[in-house]
Length: 167
Image (tube, rainbow, N blue to C red):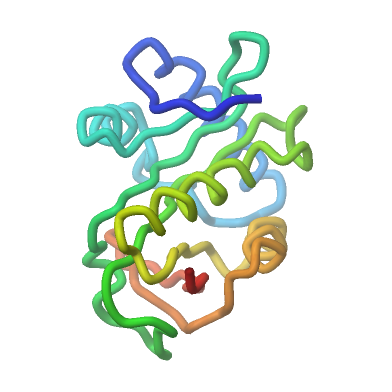
């Protein structure tokens, strides 16, 4: 498995990962990613254009996708709770892994990369959020060492559990 910055030719594989995650959420009755076609092609194209899109490749196949940004996220300006660290942070959004590859450390590559690059450019922490019913993601986040900080409201007006990992 290797992590690379995504470009347009990765888009079909990225969309396949997102759609697999959307189907999983629907099956588990988790309302995350079930309305407004979010995330969709336009969101992923915007991530690619901003150079925030990353994929994990195995045998020339995209098996996981995520957006990693090393800039402030306005959704994190207000939190019902408190962040651990002040200062510069990196954010991981929209992690999606093909079902066959869940539990195989593909998602962990995104966190490892964000930690390494974040430290290099002076980030004090990594931040992430997820739906309160997304128990699999919450377990993953906590296993990676993130700590629960409170609740943020994301762009569509819904609440998300917010976590931070000091670097």
